[in-house]
Length: 72
Image 1 (tube, rainbow, N blue to C red):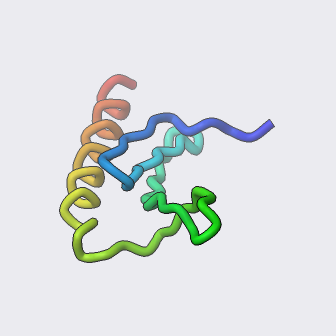
Image 2: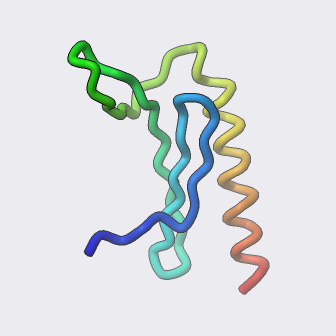
């Protein structure tokens, strides 16, 4: 059974996925898009227009992780 993310944040097509590895948190950033066949795909490559939302999600992820550390 795959492990579920600890938390996710999303702004538009950009997603920050937070993983809890026994109290050590990691964050994956991805962008969703439809390919030429109309199927949803994800990538870790970002355009200039994505960067502001990427930085906002990084800040939200950091705040969420800090809150988890303070709750322990």
